[in-house]
Image 1 (tube, helix red, strand yellow):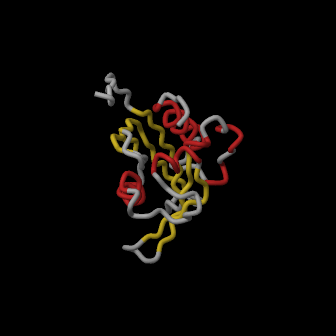
Image 2 (cartoon, helix red, strand yellow):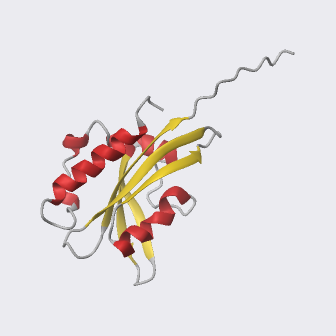
Length: 154
């Protein structure tokens, strides 16, 4: 993972989302100009919300940055948001129901067991300012540094 202040990507995306809102409750997906956030795109993702009925929703990635995929341990070829991505999946319904952004500190392990400390944000997008039909997000982490050295030859 690249050296990166874990709050920078999340803070920049939240500021950008607020700028896009203007006087609306939510920006539209089409308002996003990737060129304006190109320095954090690897930490970002966009999820499409597909309502099956009032109770059941299906979430699909339509954009997924490489660093976000690594942090969430997602195969880039996966287009849906698997329930195994608990640090993401458990909050998606909350964004839809509460109609509010979520910014959360993370404390998790990557696929090889490294301790990761970071943040994620989930920001609602609406094409009609009524229904939340996309979620813009960012996640960034840093590996915890350990201050020990083992002599494995003794």
